[in-house]
Length: 363
Image (cartoon, rainbow, N blue to C red; front, side, top):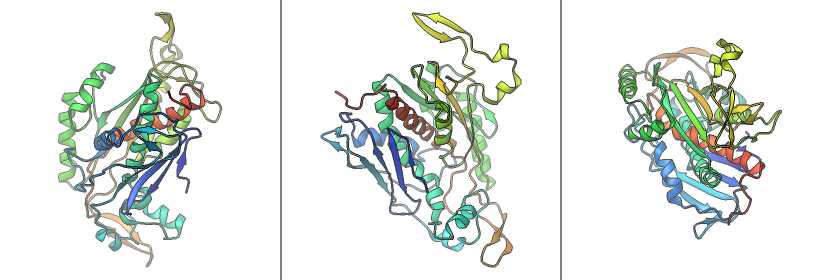
């Protein structure tokens, strides 16, 4: 397994869904960054089920503990170890189905790759539970990026085929955190809630799309040709369980446009060069162009559903059926918003350190 990401801001995550804990180690964080457990806790709390419609009944406290790398409220330059303990664990259902892989999950592929030695409880290392480790690391990365004037925000733009109306940045900042779906469109939010509740009632689930935006990232950040900015962002985003698609700017719609429609024309405003549109999503040639970095991330429907599905018994090599019991989200999209923000922050922080945008000693 490869469990580390980044070159200068290197994040290693550990733990499984039903193991003792999940956590992250950050190596390369500059010394002198003010950070507390409360700073990290605020981000982690945004990921918890709370009052999200159709959310899992698993009620982990997710109390953040920082065990190293921070002294007297500031980073020391040493590795930062953070974790949360898994307290509300019920593995009873997973022993029963360990040899009948759940459709849509990594049960079968993990079984084949690791010869059955992998921790299968709750999906183990492949569970959405591991994303709490991304959020912890992202909380530190966000604070570092803020020192460079870079802000990251995310919001839900689609659930179950219901699309939110496009909103200006200020509206997204103002509205997204005022409802459980983290959607900036109040009208669409109500429709999305009804869709989630309908799927839950039918023993089913739905997916959706999260948009992540990085504001005020300077032009010139990126390392072509194989460490392109969007390439590394996409790589990190695809590490989030249930992500099946990533697009920047106009994305796939760019394939439908003419060059005259898709090209972002330039202008000088207040002494700086800006693009008049942002079809490129803030990145050209694998390098930031100074415009907002805009990425949309598609999440598949939660594969754990109570409806009967076809599967196999790996021991008997026979066809069988399966109905997944337990505590699962009918839609993970709202809880994924802080995860997408965190992964973007981790990646951009690494590039910012590589470019010298963030000094290695903060004063």
